[in-house]
Length: 419
Image 1 (cartoon, one colour):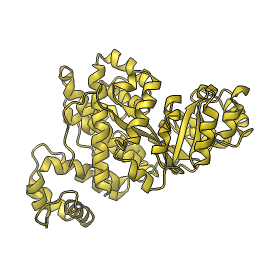
Image 2 (tube, rainbow, N blue to C red):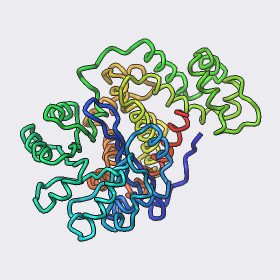
Image 3 (cartoon, rainbow, N blue to C red):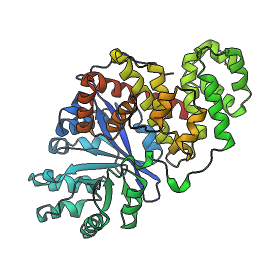
Image 4 (cartoon, helix red, strand yellow):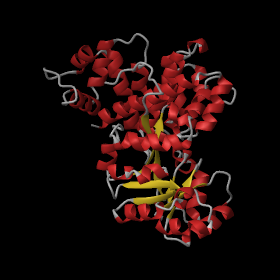
């Protein structure tokens, strides 16, 4: 079970975070990877180089799981990374090498990119100006990625028509909601990245199922401040599915216990209730989710919860309760996961009214800016995040380290849960 680590030193280490990329049917296509560390705020060139080095060195623990599931990974490379053959540390067929247009102007670059493509790598172009001097690059491209935020349907259609002059798929970036997704899909976009998958689909909103309601009631019980451990153990053990998964998980090689764990009581005594509770939270949310993007929403919820907790711990002058903020982050995507209005969900949640208001996105809520900061970081919008940190009087180094640690913690937790 992952523990909270000591604050990382952002100047000496990085972690790799990911943004999911979906196809036109909202099926997961792959992930764009980016680094988390002080380098993230130091400029795009350093960020690209650091990400490539970290992934190539297998620092990203989720990489093998992504590849095993047959999904793609997309990374940014600068000209030095290409010339140093860094993409070849990644598996062909599954990897997309993403470059800015200006990289193509270097004399050696066309040949290097042609060689990568011939060896099975996808070539992705970051941005699309339509400038004729980049026609050679467009001809090589498998993917052209462009931001669509603020663009109208006619603009996206015109852009797509230009891209269709070359044989490449258009990846729409910064697709923020279901309406944007629908608009882009209608004009022929086939890959999508952005916050849209975190938003509830108003078309499929429905009443909460009895199964989800029972899981939320179990969440209420495990969040009690002074729980009756014996009663909780009996409640958990009465749920065959949860008990089977928990005992299988604890008896796996990942733990290496010398004795076989035979009951929930035994598990609680051996691990301790606080450690077991983290796992149970994720399992219960996973069981409730009805979204096609459930695995990514689950990981994001766990990551967001830990990030809010760590930010509050490392800025104690705010006076916020870290455990309460952990629950706020953990529950912040439940409306999307359940396809149920948040107004209905919060009636089941074991949190104070101010936190419920934050989940409802009350504009005047004091906790909401921290949720918005988390979203900026998740979407690799570092300039927006930097501005929010200044307005909130948060220490940039502490926030960056908290996000890095949260990424690692959630990756471990959800990987173990999946295993």
